[in-house]
Amino acid sequence: MADNTDLGGKLALVTGGGRGIGRAVSLALARLGASVAINYSGSEAAAAETRKLIRERGGRAEIFRADVSDFKLCEEMFARVEDTLGGVDILVNNAGITRDGLLVRMTPEEFTAVLNVNLFGAFTCLKLASRYMIKKRWGRVVSIASVAGLVGNAGQANYAASKAGVIALTKSAARELGRRGITVNAVAPGFIETDMTAPLGGDIRAEMLKNIPENRFGAPEDVAAAVIFLCSEGAAYITGQTLAVDGGMTMGG
Ligand code: NAP
Image (tube, helix red, strand yellow):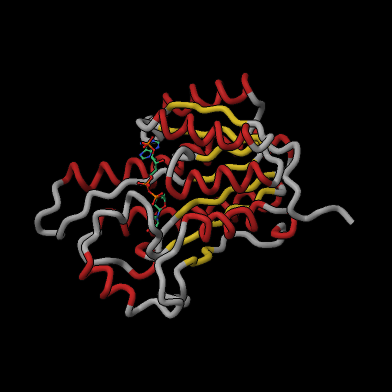
């Protein structure tokens, strides 16, 4: 029987794949045999380090700079990826930012900046990647949403709206692309230890921990495990879903 988790011969593009959750996803996909196109926007050293880690383990990876909120730059990036590694089979929309603040104080710039990276960036890469997947009649798209997109979060109206948008984008794309052998899913992490959550203070952490049945914050690898499952052959009949990886925090909320 063929190994359901073997991604040998596949090319995966991971946006924001150089650090945090994106790095864990890039490493996990490479471990299963996929070649990895690591996208980054500012953190070149981190992206190069992720590439190095993959190559040291015998994998194939290249790094590609592009701000995912810029459609033109993404078009150019996909062309460079195609020239260097080939057409994308697996897309992981992971790039994301926060600009937290209470609604009354949130500026229009803070709102649109988050929407542009988190939602427009996901749309752009999904649109550009689907061309290759449709031709091959095979594809996997996994977007990193958030539990904030499921249940909302005070101080994160922009972020929560962007992630709810990612979930709806996922469902719509799944309906459009299902007939073509392409699955489109989302993963909704809870509280994961990365640079994004590092600034949160001890009292906020203690309060959050009370609502996590697993009684710990997640690691990037916890999210990567869900992503690689959804990219595997074994997940061929799962599409349009949002899988919460949150230690039980939301439980289908
Ligand atoms: P992180 O450590 O802050 O990393 C963010 C990643 O996004 C970096 O690789 C960054 O690359 C990339 N990025 C940001 N803006 C970009 C842009 N305009 N174009 C391309 N790449 C861009 O955050 P993380 O915790 O790993 O988050 C990864 C994803 O998980 C995000 O979508 C986030 O919303 C989601 N998430 C995280 C948590 C959590 O608790 N950590 C919870 C729920 C959801 P550069 O540095 O090169 O710009």
